[in-house]
Image 1 (cartoon, helix red, strand yellow):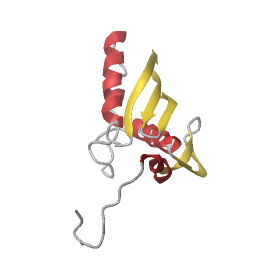
Image 2: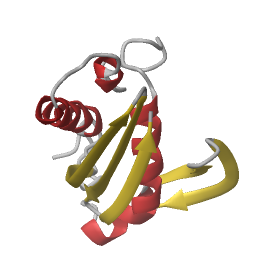
Image 3: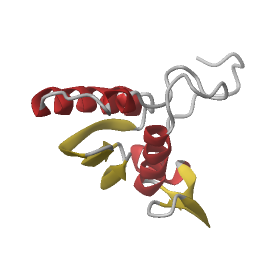
Image 4: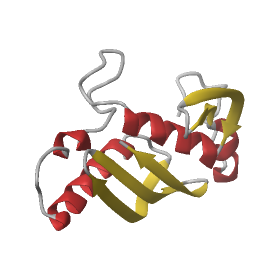
Length: 135
């Protein structure tokens, strides 16, 4: 029920959610803005890219729930199983802040020297998209 009796609560059709989500496109290879606006699953992939590239607790402009913590694992000699489970947990914690993201699947992690490469499918309310990120 609304505070004003003449205004009825509006419900958003799930098929319209994708049109409401928009973000400025980023070229993943260069990390620079392209100048275009993307919507739907592409916008959520840009949001995920930015969230996974921002260190948690480092920037006062973001809440403490925004950002990643998996870079704390780089430089230590953890077993591959432990590394994969921790990175998956950190990624899930980072991305679940957005209510339009429902999960990740098909996670692949490679650690070569000081570079952590991740590839996964981002599952959202408007569709799925494969995401690749190097840290």
